[in-house]
Image 1 (cartoon, rainbow, N blue to C red):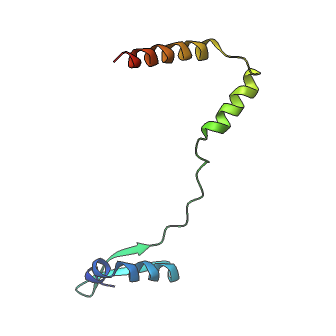
Image 2: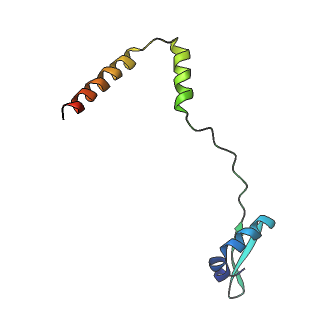
Image 3: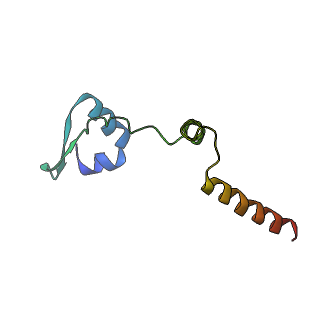
Length: 86
């Protein structure tokens, strides 16, 4: 496949990679590069789930509110009151 073919007909090149493990790229009928298929990467770890994390925290803390949670709640309440006065 020529460099021009690769640029202008990428969907065909991609389809060819599904059938072949590699495609030889040429310029002026001389090989200049080899395009190889990358094996499919294993799935990454699951994304962070806020609801599942909250359930885990509740389980670990035994339903008690920690000092940091209480401090955060007070700070957020103060900000909510400031916003009401505007």
